[in-house]
Length: 52
Image (tube, rainbow, N blue to C red; front, top):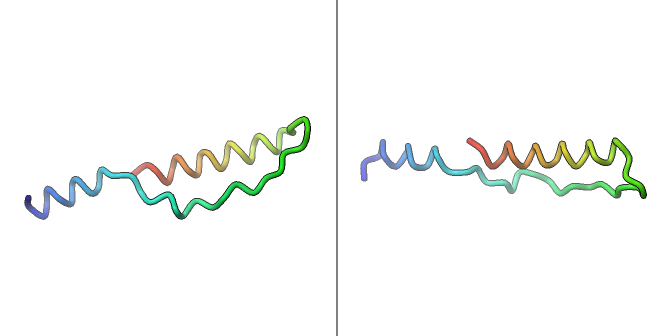
């Protein structure tokens, strides 16, 4: 396998999601709009970390 082929294969892999911190939210009962917004933001952060 050439270096160019290897670099191309590596570029297509997901990033390491270790950089995404834990979701630190204790939703109220019933959950508020802010609670839901925090979960959505964290989910989007994880999706971004898993994409290249």
